[in-house]
Image (cartoon, rainbow, N blue to C red; front, side, top):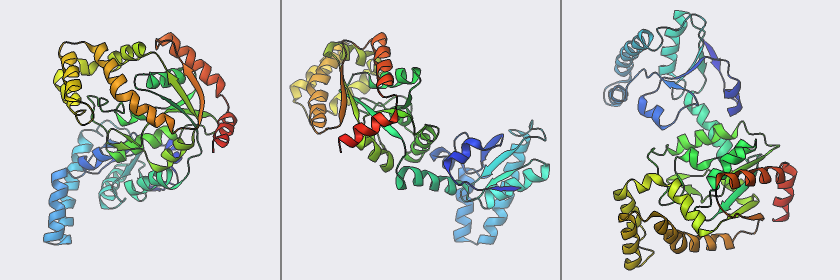
Length: 361
């Protein structure tokens, strides 16, 4: 067995192993894990709870004895199933919570089989420390440009068109599995906060700090997930490109972008009810009626004009670092593609972003 010490998140990009194996229980793995890791638990959730109870209520010795038997049984199962077709050249990296007994026992058996096993020193905790160091403790080196605009101005779509032009972009809403507003939930459950931060760090690490990275302007919370402090600080200082478009174009775009809601009227009705604290009963009843009759564009226009735009106007009034304001005639793909090309040319050098950021401080 060879110990592997993680000194930075970038080490994972150059790691020369075939498979990263997380031997923790499924619930631990589901909360967060190293990028690309598979889960081969040596204790199930129930078994882990059982061994923990024996440890605290009986004795550590009995817990280790019973736990050892369970680990051996589960490892044998993995050898007969998931690992059955691995040849002698296969090289795994194995980790558990702290790089202790679970990963040590599993790695010892794999090592005895003849595989060249690397064992992550410090386990998942060493990885999590690097995440915290990157997203909480240190300043990010990246040069961000924020894409902002009212609801329905196709900001996320524009980000992906920017990526198609070769620009760097960070899709926070995609990483958080949420579209960022009351109506922004999607069928996919949001990742845990730790998993969101792992996705975020994995997206940030390969980005070249010498190049501009475009990111959508967000509040500090996307659905139930918080933007970590280091990124939030960088975003707060970044220059902004403000996008505007006619109300009709925005409502049409929303109807397409939120088509999942138009197919689930019960869910849509519950979301409209969440607005009762901000609008009159008459206004809420009107929106419900439009939803029930499938009058989607009228509903979208009303929500934009009466709910979202007044709140965006207050937020926008506080922003002083708007580098450019683009008023688009529509939000059709061709227009967004041309806009992306224009922005890529305008912000092709990090020095441009630096000068704009400095001027607004």
